[in-house]
Length: 378
Image (cartoon, rainbow, N blue to C red; front, top):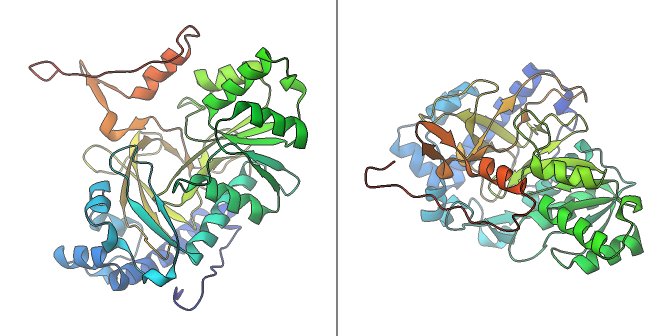
């Protein structure tokens, strides 16, 4: 069993994404047992939860057995934030907070081991998206303000051995000055900001189509439809700028990412870092290709590990070996947030579907969507 107190370095089987499904499951089940022992001993929240529900962690032996455990929710994290901490304060080296997209932000504490795990995750995610030590990435994201994302990208690119330029978000003029001066070949940016880069270049006579940029790691916004074709936002970028676009999905809570490979058919799961489940509105498992809420269990986290955490994100998942050679589950684009689901005359809608329609209208620069109910709740 891995002893968090004796070392801050974790050795991961980097080839696990190309192993058989049977081997991947066996690896995850072994790590699950270690995790449950660890949180039962060190997490006030989980030791209380297991006692309250009369759970014997020795009965949880398989991935299917996970369904015997209660879910962890965002409310749990908010109301009992400190009770999730599994280490003493003097082992914490970085504090971050969630974005608060679905409610009040919560604090996460990372140890040196957690930062190494974060670096490993981003390194293999960039490699999955055809990254290498020969690349130079321009980071158009913040590295401060208690956010995890920018720090994660920095650590991952550094671990991969590639070059980077930390420009930060916004500042379009400085972004283009950096591209023309340093000549990076890759961007890490929000897709809608890439459109602003294009607009600025066109307005200022910059020959962006012949610039050094060849690809972009796109964060924070969906690029693709459920069938993996480019959505309106992605297509508008591609129509203007013929660069390779890679999607990525991540969250602070899981400290890991699902990253596109060159086949553009979903973000690859890193099974050494996460156990992923998908459930419907009644918390029952959904089948491959069906929409369900992503539920994650973190592996290898020392500071604040999570068991069966409900992310609130509704997605589809797909199994089967990818043409890239990886044998891991793939995640489709986020269809919507569970608490933003709209029921309209018997039809389920999510805001991203409306965003796609509005983004397709070039004369619409900004918009606000308001949803209300009448006196009978429809």
